[in-house]
Structure formats: structure tokens, C-alpha cells
Image 1 (cartoon, one colour):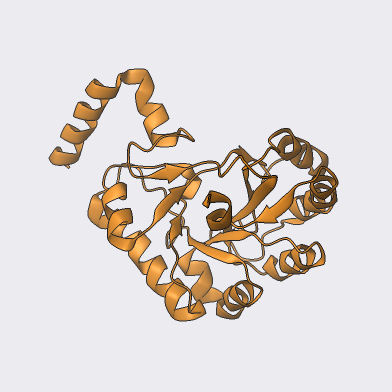
Image 2 (cartoon, rainbow, N blue to C red):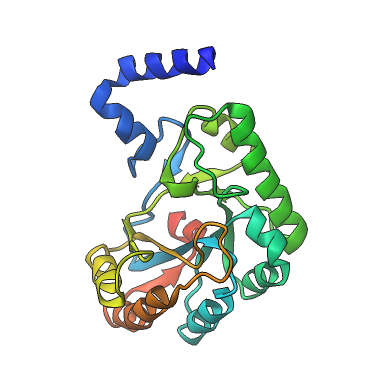
Length: 235
């Protein structure tokens, strides 16, 4: 604990008080490990991402994405994969990209490097053993990065991913979710939604699904195509 407090004090002194919050939560911050929040702006593509799954509602989302031929990236939690292994395998079989969203969706700030490593490593192993896919992308729960995270990302071969825009779909109605994300729609955008609520069972994601029913055809009408995060990061 003493070592961690010293690290925090040193970082705060180097960054300045106001910059510490940006380092931890800023979309463009790579202070605590390599992180991206947007992709290639040279082509009309958007990456849809979904956090906190798999859940009992993920199958409905997969059906919706299939109807619109929209590949996406799912940042999934190890706890949820162990609870719903077949749903996790459905995500992989449908051709979507799978990323690591830590094991238990616990906030990783003010935690030791050993704790962060265990959360990320356990999720990595669970996902690989269950789906046959070893993630190369990581999104920190709540988008909060911390000391030691970059080291663990390097050990596991993971690139951190934030977002260009987030739908706030856990608290807004469908029209406002869709409106927010349309406002962020631009070449190379990475958009964040959720097909779960942490590790809760049977989450209500209907507002997100309804927003997506409006959003997908509108984005297509504007000339955008859908890519995974890895695809949208490629040149």
C-alpha cells in the first residue's frame, strides 16, 4: 500500500492535479498502458462495441446484428462466460470479435498490480478455454485505468480500447441513446453500448436494443459500414 501511495503521489506531481483524472479516465489517455479510442478515419466505417456480456439477452442482440450484417466487438467478463458459456460461444461462432473486460467487472483503480493481473488473466483464460478465441483487446471496467495495468496488458498482448462515444444505455431511453451515438458517428468512430449490466443475471437491455434498431439502418443510410475494432484500427 505504501508503494502504491508513493506511485500516486509521484504521478499526481508529474501530471498535475487536474490531469490525474484525465490519465485515469480520459478517452485519449495512454498513461497507464497503450489505449485507443478511435480507428482509421480514412474510410467510412464504424465499430460497434458491447460491454458486460454475455447475458441472457445477448442472443437477441446477435439476431439483430445478423439481420443488418453488422459485425461488432464484444468486451466480455469472465464471470459471465462461466455462467453462460454457450452464449459466449454463439458470439464467437457469429463471427464477432471478443475482447477482455476483466473477470468480475470490479473497478480496478486503487488496486494492486497483482489484483489487476488476476482479474485480467482469469478472464483471458476463461474466454480462451470457452470460446477458442484469445482476446487481443481489453476494455477496463467503467473505462478506468490504473497503475500496473499497462504492464499486464503487455504481458497478455492486449491493447486497451476506450470509445469515441458512449450511449449511456443503462439509464437513457432509446431515442436519446440513438441520438447520442448518431452525434458521434464519423469515420473511424468506436461506439460503446452494453449487452449486460456488470455481472447481473437477466439484465434489461431493451432500451439499447430499441435504440440499435433505429441506429443501424440510419448509419447504413449515411454511408457507414460496420467493422470490428481490430478491423477499424487497421490501415
